[in-house]
Length: 307
Image (cartoon, rainbow, N blue to C red; front, side):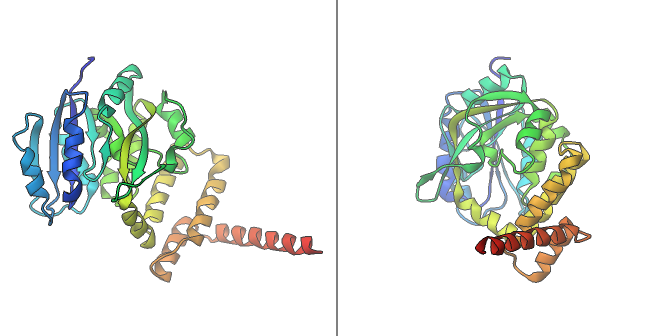
C-alpha cells in the first residue's frame, strides 16, 4: 500500500489554548489519507467549545468525551488504538504542533523501511513561541533505519529518545499487541511502550525537524521526579532491559550505579520519598557504598594534588 490510512489520535485534557493550532496542523497535512479521532478526558476548560468547531469536518471520524477523567494519558492512547481504523497511528498530542509535511515524510520512511515505528527530530517551543533545541536527538544527525533490537541497544538504554509521542507514527496492530503494563504508569510508560513496540520490527528516524514539542510539559516531568515516580518507573524500564538482554551482563552494575548517582543528587518532596527511590535502586546499599567510596577517593586525590 502506497497510500495507507493513518488514524490520527488527539488525546486532550485542558489544552484549549493550543487545540486550534493542533487540529489545524493535522487537517493541513500534505498527506491527506487520514481519519481524525479526538479524545477529551473530561476537560474543565473550554476545550469542547474548540473541538465542536471541527465536528463536521470530513476527516473527523470520532469525538469521544469521557464522563470521568481517566487520570492516564496512556489509557487514552489505548482507547484511540481500539477506535482506529487505519493500520498506522499518529498520536498528535493536543498541546504540540508540527510541520505540514510530517505525515508525508514519516509515512514514506515507514513504508520504505518496512518499519513498525517511524519518528522525526523535534524542536521545543514554550508557551510564548520561543524556540530551543531538543536535546535527546543531538546524536542522531542523519536519517536512518535499523532493526528495533539494535535501535534499543544503541539508543534506548539510558533515556527515552522518542520522548515526544507527537513525533512518531507506528503500526496499530503491533501497538495493540504490546503488554498493557505501560498503561498503569504515569511518567515512563511511553518509554516502555516504545521499547516493546520496537521489538516487533524496524525503526525509521528522520533527521528533519518536523515536530514542535510544547515544553511547558516539563512542569509535569519535574513534578513526577519530585514525587519520585519517574525514578521508580525508570527502574521498571531498567529491569525490563536487563531481563531481555538489552543491557549486557557486564554493564548492569555500571548502568545501575550511573543512574543511582543521579537519584542521589536529585531533589525530592520528602526524605521518605528519597529513601524509597534509593532502596528500590539499591536494596543492599552496596551501590551507595561504592559511590561514597569513589567520591572519597576523588577527594583524597584532590587534597594530595594540593601538596
